[in-house]
Length: 426
Image (cartoon, rainbow, N blue to C red; front, side, top):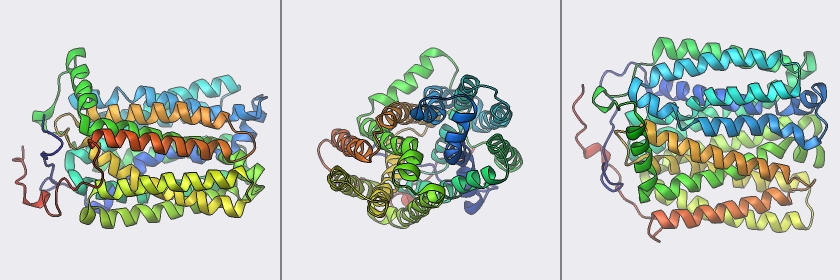
């Protein structure tokens, strides 16, 4: 396996039929199906819980939490399967199941059945976490991968911007069950697009055998690689804080801060600004390097969380909470894509397995801790801000471990990957 300091470039193959703009939009749309499973129903959580017999106000969060936990647990498997059979078939099966199970959610007659179905949806949706990362690693390397991932994230952020508003609009004219119908329709559109346009990106010589020893070995290598270890787990802790906010956002913003029906617009406005910071990251990361950008963002994130916790302890209004929370979320934009690119750098031949490990850690740790953070909601922003500070500090310790105590290194200078001769096409 190549070391983290010596790249194994994955330059864009000649004659790839999908142009950069379409590729970015397609990968964003695949990831957006998962985001749609969360954000579009945020305004409807109270309606769903009440209609299906939920009693505890915090119980409604399980509609999100169960989905995220099952998705994270299942994400260990699609990467290994895709390393053997290819990215395309795994992705098409996952999207097909997403469509079918969305219809099942729409007709669920009890809260328990809805939670079970949401858990199964999460199992299949895990491939939508893993495959875009593996496909991206198949095509690009290093800072170029970070740049493209930022563009994908920027496009992907359209969903958190619009989804809550779509959910709110559906509730104005129809019941919450139609929200799942919209999810199914979007799944059909993505399936047709992927089936018609996306070729297989896994190189034939990189295909891995399907047996427990090979799969466990590939995943073990991902965890043993010190240069990636801290970024795998660091991303998970930052994700946990974000999931904690998402789980409690409807209660915190709509109810505690009394945003009411304006909640979707507040939530969407934050997402719009995050999209802007992803665009900024895509413009600067190749110039300054993924490490320098993400390390700076992580330090700023910790400082912002400390300031916001101090404010929350003394009471705050919506107009204080939103700018401070938005600033912290913007730092997540600089952290996420760059941590992903850094952590997958050593794994050109086993990108699927490494992507599965990363998705598993990021989503399971994020979902479990995020659910606990959400359940700690006490009618104020104090639990989420304390969690953000603790998660950010933990991520910094993990990054320092991977970097052997040195932050802001530039492993490969600008233009490095352009000067590396790509492997011969097969």
